Length: 183
Picture 1: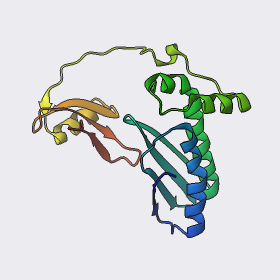
Picture 2: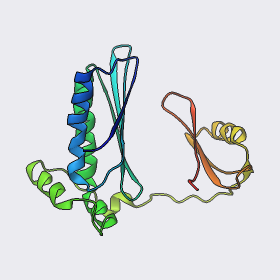
Picture 3: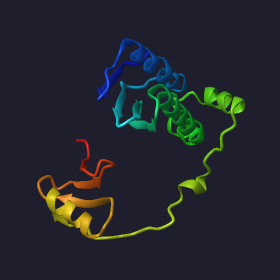
């Protein structure tokens, strides 16, 4: 069984809630041979119950889903359904990526027979626009300013300190995030 890191914001993680999360989210394990520590974040703010689940998959992939509703248990159920739909929709691509094993395509196919889900085609992944631009060296503060000036939700730049390509982005909470390559 996978390891879980369950955190709460403005909500107490009771043993019953922890058990429910582990029982429901562990359904994802049946699709993969090896997954990393599953991170689950539960929050209850102003009558809304939000669940965020991140599942690291062998080979560097990540499954991520979130859902918000008026009930925490409903949000948990809905986020698991979203994750399963992602797996079903992308099962062909996952099977190609994990040719040496790791992804249990036969289980995903059986689940699809029981509950039909539209599969993604290669055309679903074709870019509709390609844009080239100079990647200028700058610090993170300047990149955030540039992102705001062009009114985008992300901005690609070369970090002056590291010489690496980085991305700054606007998060759902209107704060900023930074994506750096792993060394």
